[in-house]
Image: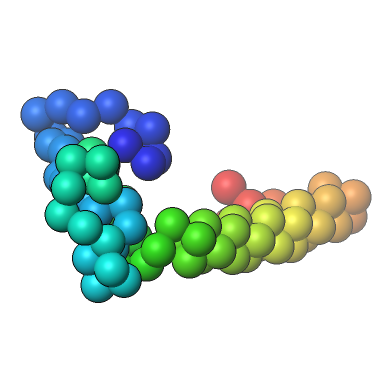
Length: 88
C-alpha cells in the first residue's frame, strides 16, 4: 500500500496500474501494485511523478496550516487568551 496502512477486512486491497494505462502503462504484472481504495482513487490516472508532485503540494499546504495554527497558539498562550479551537 502506498499509505502504509495494513490491509484487512475493512481495507481490502485494490490493484493499481503504477504507470497508468491512460498514460501508456501496460496491463502486466510488473506494472500492478496493491493499493488501498483511497490511495488508488487519489492517484487516479496520474503518473508516479505527477502523483509525487500532488502529494508534495498537499504536504506543503499542511505545513503552512500547521505553522499558522502554531503561531495562533503561541499568541494565545503568551497573551493568556483562550486557545483557538483550530489548534486542537
